[in-house]
Amino acid sequence: MKLLVLTFLTLLGVSFAQNESAGLSFTDFLNNQAEIPSSAASPPAISVPPAASYESFLATIEAYANFMLPEKKRLETSKAAVNSETTSPRDEFEKQVDYEKRLADFEKAKQQKILALEQDYQTRTKETMAKLKAALTSKEDLQPDWAGMLKKDAGIEEYRERINKLTYKISEMKGRISKINASLNELKFSKSDTEALLKRWQEKNLLYISRLERACELMQDYIIQEQVKVLSTDRKKFETSLGTYNADKEEFELDMNDASSQTVPFDYSGTVKISPQQAKETNRQTDNFTASVDYINYPFMVDGAKLYPGAKKAHIFYKEQELPTNGIFKRVPSLDNLDGYPEWLAYADSLLSGKLSPKNLDSLYAMKAVSIKVASETKQGDGFWTGKNIFRVAMFSFCAAGLGLGILQDGDVKSKNDTKNERYLEAYYAQNAPDYPEKRDAYDKSRKALDKSVNLRSGFYIGAGVFGLAGAASFFF
Image (cartoon, rainbow, N blue to C red):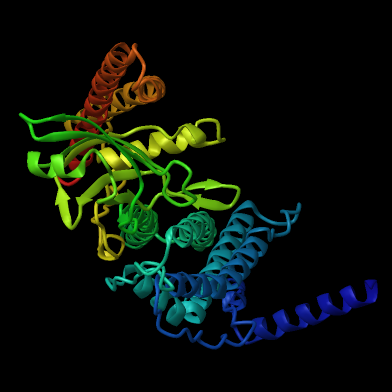
């Protein structure tokens, strides 16, 4: 090893002596050594097919970044090696002025080496960097790879499965975007590039995730659209009994049920309008009465079987004539003690009453572009407490306060909603009991309390939204 070192030093001395004999100064010799040619052949330009979806666009950005990262790391490693180089210390025979000149020449040579390394990196990555920048700033609006999931062509369970897939994809894509962000940060764009490129990149990603989230909303709306669909039983004779006839109103009291049905169990009580002549003709017999019942497509599962207790309307016929009806569907006692029935009933009530109704969205809801802007960073050298920044801080503070109060109020809403559901079930089950008016009043009172709490929560959230919007708008005006 020592022999190799001595040989290297000898050759270096010979080289220097030859250069010196040709009239080359020591400074010129150092400058020549700073001309570092590329130590490896330029890598072939990366070829990426045009993006057909946002997922393939992410793959493109990832490919460009992965192509450039080894080059960037190679540059940083080489620069670190150059920066770690040191010159020999001054000895007792070297003048101070000569030492200072030698030191200055050495540092100049190091900087030239680093410049040569950076120029080599720029040359090797120029084409790929241009493609990466073009892709990041592209105005092409690429849709997610929907894989047919936006179509309204399935049942409720399939839509729920799609929600699960979309939710998983959102999580997965956020992680993937985060990794790509880390790779882009390692490339260390200039400040101007960061402003122009990464801001646009962030906006694209926010739009992409927003579309996936809106697709989840769309699937949920598809579910509700299916659940509120009105189905009907066949028209047939159900168990029916006639009560008192009111000749002045031309109405028969009527009870009808099919409580033991394995498909649409119901218990109906009300009145039917029928002329005195027809009423007399019936002789209080129900032989000529038939009916069909409308119900919503929201089943209650019992041991894997589907029951549809969500009866909505009764169509009652005398012979071939449909009679005007007015009545209610009462609880079916056989369902009361089944697991999950109270929860099913509360949700079904929301569907039947219209409190939970579909927005009738279609695929365009998820596909359309939503304007998303990312605020620019404050320019260096500007004081923070400018008029605009003070306004922004105030607006965002009010926004945060409103949001916090809204979240607190949300807990109160949930509590009052639980109370309302309990009062509803109590009133529902007590329809034929003496204390029904009291139970009904308690339900009305709990519902009004819930409405008041919901309005208060909405006020807080609306206020937070207004203040937040005002704060965000200050970035553009």
